[in-house]
Image (cartoon, rainbow, N blue to C red; front, top):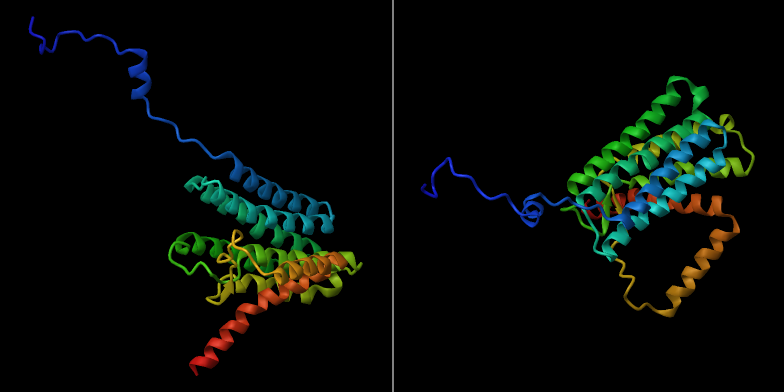
Length: 256
């Protein structure tokens, strides 16, 4: 019988050939995604604590999420474990921790008694975070790494959470300052979708040597934060939130 006859039988593949024929599964890098999962948990924990009326814990959890979110990307770059899965997972985690959680915390703490105005402000913030993240995902490859376009969502989230933390720490009811809370929530939400530039700090090289005075200033900054963490952090976040508007005004004046 001819060896090319269609009716001829072929020898079964060896186990090694069967294994090589199967498509390889893509693995998921564990280390950076552990930090992302931690940030997601912190955002979820913040929502749960807000529902239970524990607003200080809810606010602090958002700060923890910000720290973990900042670490996951740096760890991925340092260990060369960046992946498209990690980028998508990080974006979804950010939406929970920096979009949904701050809006619900502020609404439960101060905006609930304002009726439609309250939940509209919370929704504007939430929608601003979603739009900010979507724009970042589509433009991060072309934008200048030194600058964020629009207030970054972690900064907006901690600005909202920082206000809650300060008010709770000073035994001030959210209902007593609801208009301030309303204004800060709207400010944070709208700032995320502006075209203003905010310094990113991504051009800082941690491997480069720095003058001794830089280390002294870092130590002094840590000491200042330790004096009264809620107030100092809130003041720093307000300054950062306003910095984009100051840069925008200066650019317009130069052009004018």
